[in-house]
Image (cartoon, rainbow over all chains, first blue to last red; front, side, top):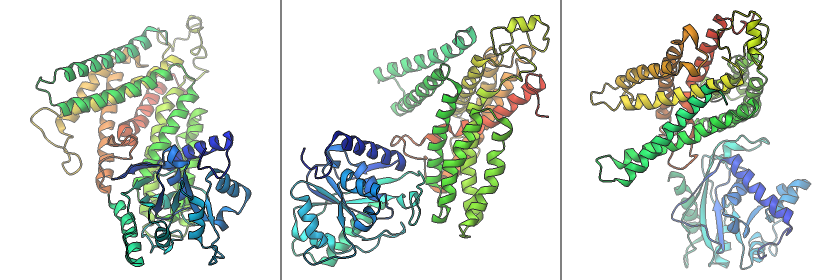
Length: 213
Length: 353
């Protein structure tokens, strides 16, 4: 079974499907693909970030065969605190964990992502870097640009998550089961010789536009 | 469900639905007839929703009461999340909302399940009513305080409290001291022993009778919606509130209510309103019809205010679950209390001292 760097057993698979179903029930997500289709080609899903559950709901709203190839990029400090989180991150979501505290030149997150996805996996990233309050989408960090510069063949899919900040706002532990809406937009690519700031603004605009649709 | 009353009521409804499905098939085959295909499609979706609804109610005849209560709890949970999703709350309301979803909703249905009438009739209008604003105040955010509090209270009241009176119909039992044998086969023996309080056929509220009461209630609600819609189609239209819903007319309200009152009275044999009080079935149906109108209008007003057409997206393009059951929510508590009041007046239930 290709694309499984993490746990392989039946149990893990079952747990994956169960968690995906659970997340969809909890978030009551209606999923929309606008000018876009689910595909197993290598992609980078980039989304606005308002809650710890964001990566989980995007991951769970993908069709199963796409989901198996898709790895969330997450903060190491949050996802390695405690055994359950660590198990979920490494074995279930097969996440790529980024150490926010020490980013070295040779161990840069972008290098790591490129190495980890090789030529089969897709990524879920949150280019804002941290969680916002859900009203405004923050400025995008430059990681997305460098990732595309190294791998211009990756399809970038903008994703907008609506209402998730109300389900689990910053600083809260217990989620409230409101309804979310996940919108996948049309793919975009880094254009030849496109300036960093222009590209980041264009990507941010693509996510913002999905909110209005 | 072996007695003739249940069989006739349920069988009649299923036959009507079968006829409706047949009619739709006929209309779809003959596209040349001068019927608007859009109307046929609306009718088809309606009939499909009715098939689902009444199939669930037929299943309710075979399962224990607590299963039905649990089912309604899940429905409440879903419509409450549709309601709150559309209602702008602030992040500081988060913990209050958690309580509303995970404490008050299960508590209300648990109390209905254990038939604790004295508590389930007040736990939300009194206790939750007071605790919600206190919890919102505890969060320390005073912006639009009264508005936010009221929205959460109304959501809980309509989606959970009011709806829970529908399965509560299954808990309307005669007081044992009055009528100890009603539950059992030994009915006739009890009557022979001289319980003159009981009318001749006193299976008014045995398990089957209670389930029939629930079935009758939902049937009358659906008939009210349908009849008000049909009567609103006649050409001379006097719209009641144009700014909220241009399809609700005086003709629809009065014609629909009159029709449903007649239909309800004709179905008296399926209800507990038997003997000399058979016309009460009609009166109750009329009340249900008026409450359905009030429910539809109120929920429309909330939707207009929020600038949406439907609640939620259970099935894309088909509106939310709350749009389907808003009339049930408004009619259930009133029907429950009127029925209970009649039962108390006639000595079937002892009033709480």
